[in-house]
Image (tube, rainbow, N blue to C red; front, side, top):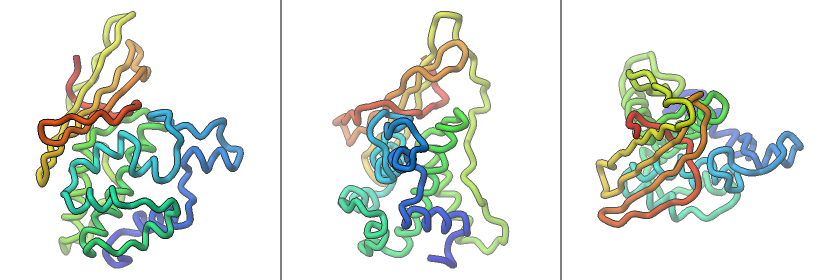
Length: 218
């Protein structure tokens, strides 16, 4: 895999293998946080929660092709080092999973530390274009996931009210649909959020909060 992905992705993969990604449970263990709660959904944070189980991650995985989503669901190991060595995917799909994990982690850090929210479809679209760049012979390649911003400036609600922005995306290779909403007050301060993944005509609420934002609002 070393010749297929840029160094930044390999560094992320190395940190994942060494269980050194700064999830809240690790920061609490090192006395660098007050709790292990996920800043996005308040569940207990871990590398697995951040990359696979949090609503922000689940909405992205719901847009992937069926072989990849089934592989993610089957993973039960707690140890990230054992999880990485699973060989049930083709090499191309393994690279896709690795880049998606990296893109989810980057989008998550932007949401937590910079109050910048990226929709599941934007993250999925970035992974698609990033991997297309890797297949080309052009020397320049994107070295970091770009946050796709709406061309329309966010307009705050009137004082005392809140605005809810919504976004949704449909997986091209399956019947999965992901939808998310985020509420902010007149100062732009985050209030609450939620995400839903639907399979065909049946909706499954993933529970908890999410930091997903989108171009729509109500």
